[in-house]
Length: 147
Image 1 (cartoon, rainbow, N blue to C red):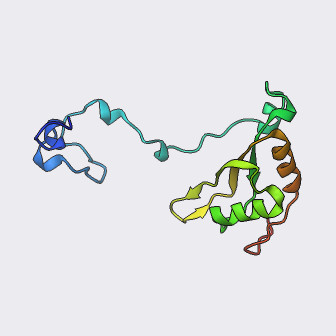
Image 2: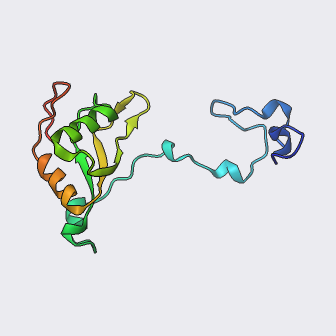
Image 3: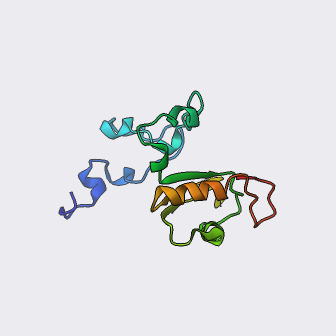
């Protein structure tokens, strides 16, 4: 489709006036239904709720306890940025011990959602981080949250 000299909306058969997505309850009502009309974006669906305790569920996973390298930090104050969280983790003696840190950000508030995933280079460092941040009080943003 990209090599064609016609605009993409014309190639898709939408017609000149319908190449922009319409708003409202009747969006797309004046065009024929196609396979893309069944698509539902993931962000419009609710977050799935799991039954039971995940820690209990995965306690008996295939990986032995000492082999886990990724941890989830919870109860992070929402005002923390990724840079501040990295500084906090490195400030607790974990500099150079991890290769991946993911702190999801809420696009509506531009604040983090309260948890992060950190992958460490060795299971020993992951265990040490879990120990350091167990019942940890965050040093920035005057929060009462405890990790």
